[in-house]
Length: 202
Image (cartoon, rainbow, N blue to C red; front, side, top):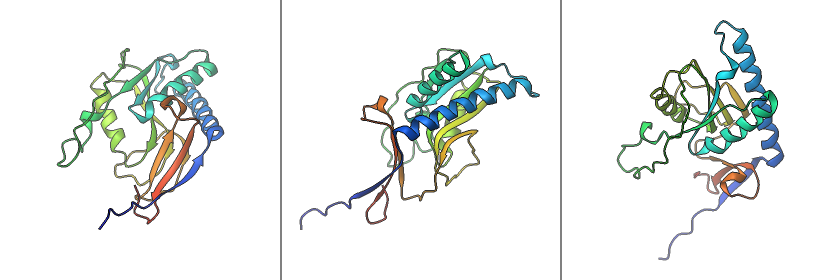
C-alpha cells in the first residue's frame, strides 16, 4: 500500500496587508495614550521610561514596528529588546518534544523601573506570556508590565489577558493562526487561520 496523502490545509485570510498596518498603527496609538494616562494616574509612571520587548519569535518584528510607530507619534522611539523564553516554557522538558533551539535574549537596557510593553503576535493559551514574564523578571523589576498582541484567539489555559489587542478571533483548538510579516521574508503582511481539510487541524 502506497503512502496516504495528507489532507489539504484549508486556509482563510483574516487580515490582509492594509488590515495589519491599520491594526498596528492603532496599537501604537493606544500604547502612547495608555502611557500618558499611567503618568497621570496613581502609579505616576514616567512615559519616558517606556520600553518594548518582543517575545521571540513571533513578537520580534511586531515589537520593532510598534517602537517605530510610537516614535512617530510621540517624538521619542522607545528602546526595543527581544526575549527568548525557550528555557522558561513549561513543556520544554516533556518527553517527545524536540530539543529546543535557543535564539538568545537581546535586552541592552535596564528593565528596572521601566514600563515594559511585552509584545507577541498571537495570544492563545497564555503559557507563552507566563514564560515571558518569568524571563523578564530575571532581568530586573519593571515598574509596570503590559501586554500587546496582534491577535487574541481565545482558548486560554491560564488567567492571562492582553492590555492591547489588535484583533480578537474565535478559533478552534484544531486550527492554527499564522501571522506573516514581510520582515520574515514573505511577500506581504497577512494573518491566516489554517485547518486540515478533514477538520483535524494542524
